[in-house]
Image 1 (cartoon, rainbow, N blue to C red):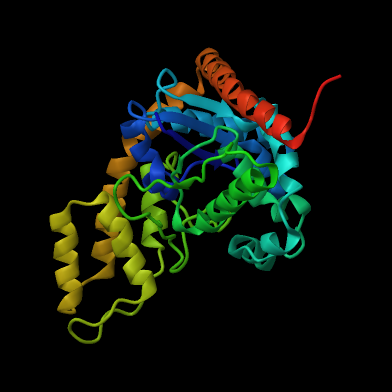
Image 2 (image 1 turned 90 degrees about the vertical axis):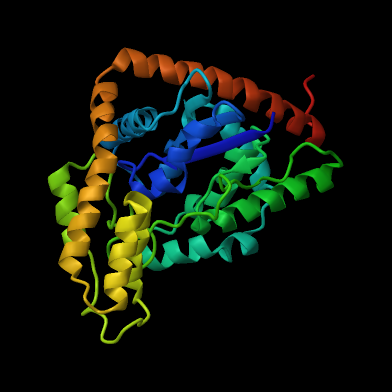
Length: 329
């Protein structure tokens, strides 16, 4: 059975980009793949979260994973820092990762531009830690958005480089898992880019109806089409992209036709989008609340997931150490 791995950083709540990018599809593949899902708390350290928030953020993401439909009986759901083998493999992979190739990574350049006062070494080697997450379970498939594809390419590079350097066939080359359709890039509400936690442009699974409606009604648009069948600006195209994820196709076609003949009213478009997002999020939000307050259940879930993940990662790390030449006396 082929292995699928995915993780989400523990830096606040999951947003629609996380959900539609991959999460809603995870429940469909748990029965047919060997699945590992994790909360990436080590990755979150690049932004220096306050100690008071660190554990709470992990608990939030864990609750949201479960509320979205992941079944800990069918998959390994764990906290990244509970599996020390990942960190040890990270050290080994750093020895064959080159500074130049990491500095050229698009995501690193973007982070430097957005956070020039926090260019730490962990940010530079972020793709190596991600590669360790993937390669520790020798995953074949990784559900990622388009923005993460450069990181996945580095994982493939490191897998090939390790195998070639040490003359083994230990690591398979991981590829993007798109659930049978094109990779989804969910846009934010600010008119450009993607929906993201650090960008502050997201709608979260925990948001109540009032908050969702307020956010959507403040979404960036433009002054409206000036002639029939004119091309949509990026902010308006983003609104339609979101609508295609949550709304009935007939409703989407109705508003597309209104845009094409210049009769569209953005206020009506946003009201419809807000209502459909609320309808999508409401049942998940209700489950999050009940799961978050069940500490005994959450403890059992992470303990079971940790044991599954450590068994897999330990076997991989042992083989990697043997290939490199580590021996016990």
